[in-house]
Length: 488
Image 1 (cartoon, rainbow, N blue to C red):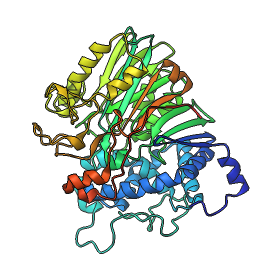
Image 2 (cartoon, rainbow, N blue to C red; image 1 turned 90 degrees about the horizontal axis):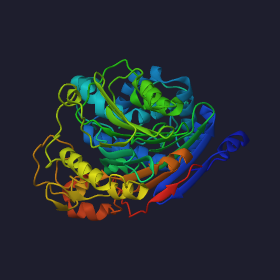
Image 3 (cartoon, rainbow, N blue to C red; image 1 turned 120 degrees about the vertical axis):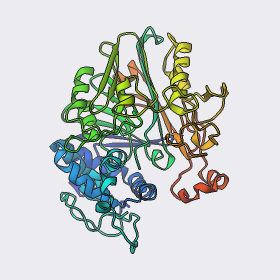
Image 4 (cartoon, rainbow, N blue to C red; image 1 turned 30 degrees about the vertical axis):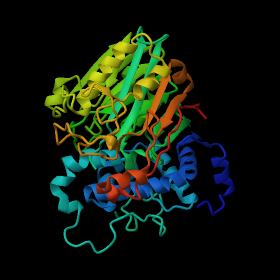
């Protein structure tokens, strides 16, 4: 990679950007018009993108049976005409920047990459699977279904027709733990917000980017993401308008509808252009297609208000506080979202992860009420107390879930997320910020797990050989410290 020298114009564009590697994170700062900042991003993040792309689409095929060409076809059918000009130009820039670094990636690939969560977790189970032979050819495989997008040049990145040479090759399982507090609940009456991502390790290991954007239009943004994404996906956002936003996925809420605007577009525009909680929700709701349904926790440091917004396609829940706290654990407080638009996911069952974490958040918030600051937030996200066993014990029932260490002897819902012994999944990071951090677009972040526990991929496969089919796709993650990521 990086064997071809940039033109003088390209070098001038890239020189405006910054890249720092810190304790497992790729910290990228980009600025300028949409194409220029996309080019900067693609060029600087190319090595991380190359590995993430190859491993992610290989594992998506292994966990769904659907080849990459089908995902790309669906993305272009569902998404290409929904993308605003500004974001399309940014994605064009990303593809051009990746190609300048030595890869062969089309705009169609970048669209598909950004639409991945919604395609795998919402479109496929709602629509694609019901007509599966349209998307997955019957009969014998006579060619590799795995991606090799770097072996020959693709079509020009401005062409978003289906590329014959594009990579041939999962419902969304982005379960998370989160909290937000303000007023009398915190140590200084300001806002404190925290979030950790739960994911399959093969996927979550690539949410290793902190992206700082200074756009020529709208507000600055700092957010966690995966290489080449124009939105967060894991969803930890800070904006120049003084907003901080996180989410936890609404498990089993999948009322997806064709014709709406994909969630990755809605959340990016909301975070770039909203100046308060109400305007953020309005933009997030614009064209809501039901994709990536979440419970959003939103804070505004301009008035120290916080809000909890449960977003289905049909039903929404909203509550706003000047003092107090909200938590997120993948279940909705709104019974309409639990029982009508979705299905109950163990709201009260503390043998299961959602019920257990809901109870543990109640306990932690009572314990630290009035004392919550960044340090307390870090401690809560790293909590490994098991409320079912009434002891500290690494398991799927922790705020900092460690499914890979859980034999799951108490499984009560075989259909629940990752309810298979020793699943390589769970916490893959932690992020916390207070009002001053949000003002300065600074994030206290830990990559790996929120409690700092390492993951040794080779040792895991050796101990649990049933997961050997993931060998080569799982990366080891050493213990990393909490790191202050200042806006660059």
